[in-house]
Image (cartoon, rainbow, N blue to C red; front, side, top):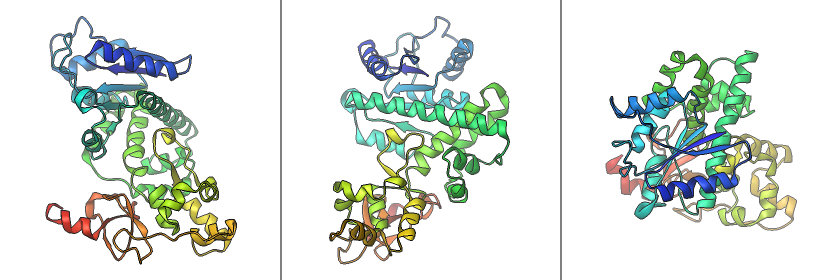
Length: 353
């Protein structure tokens, strides 16, 4: 594993590198980006691209500070420039903000609403470093499995089928295919696949990894988080989040694939269904009560607590019922059939939708 860190303040650069290095394994290399002496001439993107190609030793992951305006040896370098070159070369990248905007929720949210973009809060720095390493390992794992799939030639060269095999969930391939957003920003990666055959698996890993991070794992459908999962199971969100005994009943459904350590806890929806079906119960609440021999609160719609929820308001991050919500139109991937917009939020934001 090789991680390259961009930060325009030497003290900050050292702090980030040291913490990632402290948590990394012995065979990992954590390096600060040092501007090459031959960085003059040409566009910013071409100069940085030439730097990587001359090194001929591409990093597993690039980590970039949001503000690189203080870079004295590579004037004009920016987070956007680094990301643009990284995408062209098939190198995963994640950004962070420090200083007055460190852990700025707006900065993180902006990243969540962009394709091929991973952004992390910097503080606490120990958590940041562990998430960086988890993301790097996730892309490594995807790359390794892609190479195996290419060698075996047992899977159709279709993105959704390859991702389903990587996740060891081949039966979910059709569902995963519904997460294809059609956003043209992803096409730049695919267009470069044939230009660098030796980088093909990494470019594919970059493409599939970003898709997994900011779409499949983000929108409830194939997997669910604690709130959307509790709503789907008809268990009150507080009971599901705070009662370990309840969560233990669904432990076999826990998502443990790429990026699991850097994401909030997630569960496979299909396995949740299988657990309930095999028990002969009508829903997760009935199953949990039968196993634990105690009363468990049902889910409650955030718009009307007298109604069961079943769905997830993506904007309020709360359980919501079908009757008190609207679909997300083109905002949500088609596979995210549990993601909705609560009526009150829709009424508030509909003029802009």
